[in-house]
Image 1 (spheres, rainbow, N blue to C red):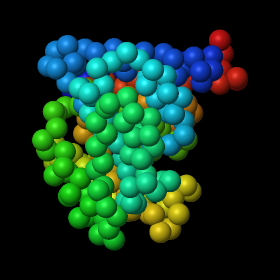
Image 2 (tube, one colour):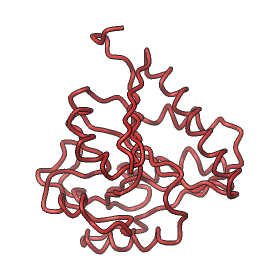
Image 3 (cartoon, rainbow, N blue to C red):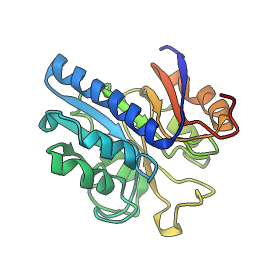
Image 4 (spheres, one colour):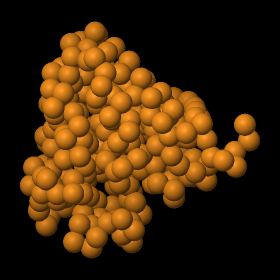
Length: 225
């Protein structure tokens, strides 16, 4: 594994969205050309939506593209907090296969993780792209401190998903929706705004698992030009 790390800054979020969408389009086109299909993982949240909107306008053979969420809350499909629901609204109309990893909500988050792992065993691996958001504290892929933290980072290489219970809860997670599916052990690409503090804290624990780490962020006003 390589610990190559890149850092790209753009003047604003719009410029970043256009650049990232172009990069993702190239990765998808390359995978389709190489083996006739592409499999990518995308994050939820509001920040990447402009990227997805730009990408959805690309002239791609979307029927050959499978998209899975990079992490997911254990909530019913259609719930406002469901990442795959948000992703599906943008890409299903284009013809892409958007694959839920939590078909139904359950109180047993460990069982949900095992189910998600089993669902993904038939997918091409490694993924052609895993696009991850990074929080201001450096967390990514729903890997928060808590009882499952070590298992999320140090599990078997063949595992593709794990149910986790953050403790304490992230600020955006209502108590009734505290159970998450996280994914780890693939190459890491951050394409959403984050702080330099997060950049310094996160790669040290994530990049050993990765082939390549690319950080992309709009330029902060205080950043030297």
